[in-house]
Amino acid sequence: MTQLENDIAIIAASGMFDAAYYGAQTSVYGTEAEMIAHYLSDGERRGFWPNRQFDPYLYLVINRDVAQACKSPFVHYILHGAVEGRAIDVAKSTVSNQNIMEMFAEISSRIGNLEAANSHNSLNVLQKRRRSAANARSAANQLWMTAKKFSNFGAAGKYLRALYFEAEPTSYRTKLGKKGWKSILDRKILLKSMAKQMRRDLFKKQGVYEFHDKKKIVDLPPRVMHFIPNVFLGGSTQLVLDIFNALSHEYEMHVATSAFPKEGSHKGVVIHDLREPTSIDAVVNLLQLFRADLIHVHYWGDVDNPWYEKVFSAALQLKIPVIQNVNTPVQPYRSPAIAANVYVSEYVKREFRQPDDNTRSLVIYPGIDLTSFPFSEIRTEEVLNSIGMVYRLETDKLNMQAIELFIAIVKKRPRTRVFIIGGGSLHEPFLRMVCKSGLRENFVFTGYVDYDSLPEYYRQFSIFVVPVWKESFGQVAPFAMSAGRAIAGFDVGAISEIIGDASLLGEEVEDTSDIVVGLLDDKERLLKTGKMNSERARSMFDVKKMTDSYRQLYREVVDQGKKVTLPPLEFGEKTEEIE
Image (cartoon, rainbow, N blue to C red; front, side, top):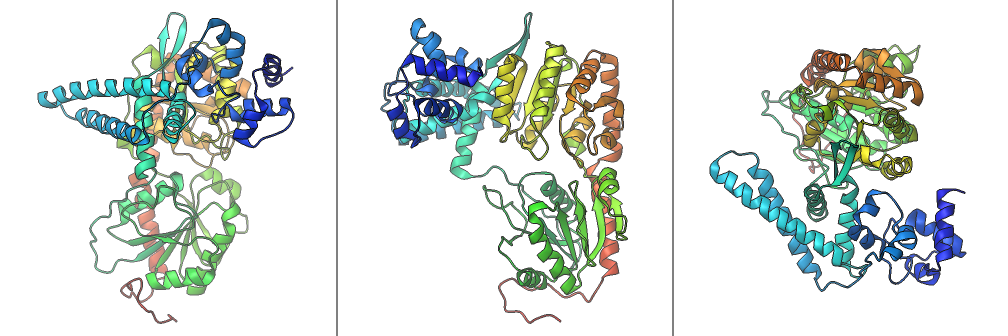
């Protein structure tokens, strides 16, 4: 009998499941067993009640040991909570929505003041910091107590509890004790996470880049149009950002895309909306208005191929040269308009360049800002015994084998702590598997982490583990190398090319976990590898080296296809068709 089947049987035998009430909330109907199965697999996580008295969210708030144990709150109550007399208080709060929003606004303000104070050292500011810290603790306690009082009724209560339970799984810190790692809910982290999510909900200011356009040093610079299917946060958008920041004083650059982040457009750069359905004529018109000298396509194929086809057709029609960046493990697009193919690794070039493709081909590694990830010494046992990964928890690079690898490492070496840094659709399956393994105390799930916060997380572990099933380059590993961390993981894609040491890469979970455990137990090799990685990152992956390569390539391609330079037209003006 599976765990789910066992839990269904426990709930059914208890007589506490109210099928009619559950169906009224969810519009899910069927046999009692089917409805209980839906509750356990989906409804409980989303906050639906199994009867008129039991609030699963509130039960977890009041009974923190249940949340930490990763158990179904309703099953726990049936087996233990009712006998132990555990509280399931569902008293309604009299706090209004306006009161809630005012309270959160105050919390956000106080956290902001506290963070600002931390960047100064004057006595006056230190005193303010002390007061702000006290205010933050007071606000945290108020938030905690309010969360306990809210029931499942009212929009304000639902919003507060939704924030709480989104932040709670990623608000734990670990402490190494005599009996191993202990997972502790950190109220300060929890409060900051909730306030951060509230700011996103209210102002939508997260999830976008800010470009800093430099002063032009030429009157009529060459014009480059970047085409990228979406400008979500990620490696390809970061590449565009780096090129803009380095070359915007030499080139007039715009971006065209078919999808924007939900938070809105990035700041400081002109981004043109070419959402599907679009047409070749629309792309032609945009390029004519801009008077492009060069097109830079950031290519990853797949479902976006119809959009790319219109871009390449327009480039061919207008005879504008194209640089194609092949950013993922796919064959490059074939078109006479392409002047050069840029691969992000030798692996992608070797495996995906077609033998009969005579287009100029070169490798330019994506660069990283070395100053953001400086080398840091490993001085504590906690860091020495910690490993981590930084990825979007999505199936484009990860699968369940990734978390199986970390679990295998901890089983072989129980004093190991694991940081799972990132969020996505695999977060819950990964968390469930860790709970099922009984190793929750060894794992820290952070959820999504801002770029500016990443260096601090890298300093908390000694080995960056690469558990991916596909990788064309991946900037997160060079980040770790720059910080002086060892790299180990699966031998896939460009990983061995990046780290230069195939002996630290395995084929399956068993041999790869042995490699990581062996490295953790060999302190001298671990530290030596970290130093070598830092030197390698500085010699190969400096963002300045990358942008210098693109500068040279831009000049060569523009000079090759140079035509009479005309001043750009103002968008919105009536234009003549250009021959």
